[in-house]
Length: 553
Ligand SMILES: *[C@@H]1O[C@H](CO)[C@@H](O)[C@H](O)[C@H]1NC(C)=O
Ligand SMILES: *[C@@H]1O[C@H](CO)[C@@H](O)[C@H](O)[C@H]1NC(C)=O
Ligand SMILES: *[C@@H]1O[C@H](CO)[C@@H](O)[C@H](O)[C@H]1NC(C)=O
Ligand SMILES: *[C@@H]1O[C@H](CO)[C@@H](O)[C@H](O)[C@H]1NC(C)=O
Ligand SMILES: *[C@@H]1O[C@H](CO)[C@@H](O)[C@H](O)[C@H]1NC(C)=O
Image 1 (spheres, rainbow, N blue to C red):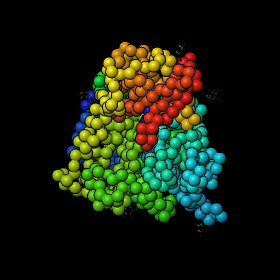
Image 2: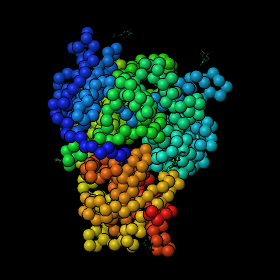
Image 3: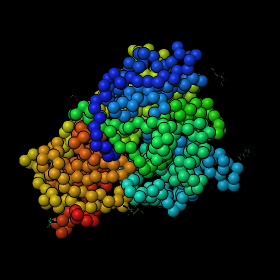
Image 4: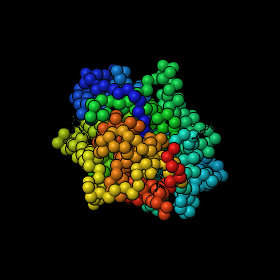
């Protein structure tokens, strides 16, 4: 699950006429070859309006040329997006983490105890790195962590909060259930990339952000790339950069709501970078040219497939899709394609390149779910334009996403009880709660997920208008507000949304709202003793259990 909190002011609907603002940086002598044709521009504007993305920046590297363009607004009333506008780039951070580790490996290659991708993590941070499984603790290597095959699933609702450090994240792994054997299965895990950032800090004695700056961003002249909000904020303050606001679209009020910037980089190494598409074009060029300071062998290591992914059923993909070290490696229309997506509250990014063609694309948008969709559609459009794929062979990715992801999710959110509890007695047949609602409030504790406080709120709720209901505000890296909908007996639905105010998020927003089964348990004394929630999808419906430690204040 993912999450965040909101600013108060609501954005008005972006007028269509502002949606195409740009600063074209097409090289003068190459105007004819710009991929930003008027047809492409129209398609961008149409997609942004249909899917509700206020702003988007794109850079394209084709051989020695870089093209870039900004579309739409970064912050209401309308600061225009241009290619230098900064965005949070989410999980595209992971490729920097693995590149930094590869550089450290190359530096240590002549030492008596060289660092390699086969080095067990516990040999570097023995006290901090403990998994619930003894074998995995001893054997998980840097490579396993970077290719998401350690057995540890996401547990994205577990980390963050006040005073929580990167080391705390790592030390908490011992309390989180693993859901596969080591090296058996791909399970995307942000926690393992945070672990790698901690490893980098221990090995270098420097802050992770300084390591990226010294070893990658500075040599590549990526001078507008940051690994903390405060650094980016300083650049904004000095007039050196503009940072886009993040947004969420409320379909009921037909307005954009600004999303608070993630301020504290608990997700160092996994998703904390802030940058612009011009810097990402330099990064693409470095990767495609296999340029120094990384050796060619180091570059090949980064894109070497490790963990097999589910088949990619999007049009154009053939053969096996795999995860390398911070990169997806796939076959697209007969060409190797190396890419990665990223998303944090209010933002999404996509980067990818065709290594055999020296063609690469970087995109950054200022919403989360809808930007991922628009970027995916445009990414394929650009690749297909470049590869001269006939229109009839392209497929309709927008319709595919709409039918396979959006529609089923909206359906589920419209009738969550039917979706999660098809067999439960409902309406008059529902079994009443054992105790008054007030008795379910209090603070609950789990070793891995620590404190969760459940309170009674009287705000109107879509399902049960005006009736008080249980709520929990989980203020973590992914801040979520959970509202509890009673189903039957001690069974509930936890409806989570990435905001603190349900007045502002559309309750059927397929990107912002998640639902999970929740349950309370009575103790021998007849009081509520525990609360469980099926918050980690890889646990296949099994719940994380919290024991009750305190009554409500
Ligand atoms: C690209 O740049 C390199 C290095 O400056 C040069 O050797 C090469 O000829 C250029 N390629 C094209 C297609 O212009
Ligand atoms: C390691 O040793 C080789 C061979 O002597 C040398 O070429 C290389 O530069 C050395 N690498 C480092 C990082 O010192
Ligand atoms: C966070 O740290 C500050 C300063 O050390 C301390 O005063 C505060 O109580 C801590 N907060 C929590 C929730 O631990
Ligand atoms: C969004 O709102 C429009 C206008 O009210 C409506 O036609 C459309 O079905 C809504 N979309 C979703 C996904 O709820
Ligand atoms: C329910 O809450 C009331 C009021 O706090 C308390 O007096 C009562 O003992 C509670 N009942 C149980 C079974 O915990």
